[in-house]
Length: 211
Image 1: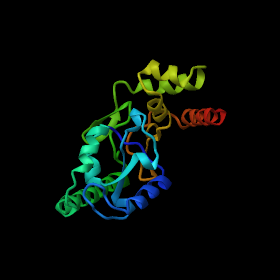
Image 2: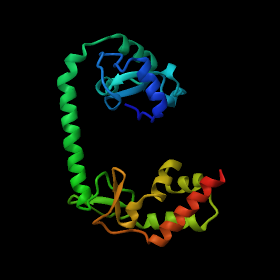
Image 3: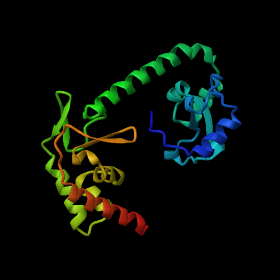
């Protein structure tokens, strides 16, 4: 399945309202948090975030929906009874709650919640600097001290531009962890000084304002 890009709340609300808050495949009726919008024509193939290109699906039907436009037309036309999916829906919610609870416990203990950031590796359920951790310092220094575009710097180190931006703004390198909008001090070794990190953030902000 390809990664589905975020649609604005306003457009989502318009689509849900048009579709009467029902999954258009199984008929499941729900509130906003239990529904998804699906791009009929995927954005990577030129599809737009317009209500005519979006359809309401429940989380299960959304997960299994094909990305190909013609295949999706067949998929959405083959209606199923939403009650048949209720067992799977309850199981999905239960697993989601248990997963988030475990992640919160890890976060509160200062342990990494998601996968290890570039420059780290996971060992005995803890993240430690990897063999290439020195590259993180090089990336930050190059960005701060050289007159080089993000595109060229990303190519130099084998990242996409968005991937490079994530590296340059990742507080994990300060020894911190972030989860669910909160930041805690982590138990892992920092790779950068706060001075270098903050200078890079200032430069990133300057680039944004310069657009």
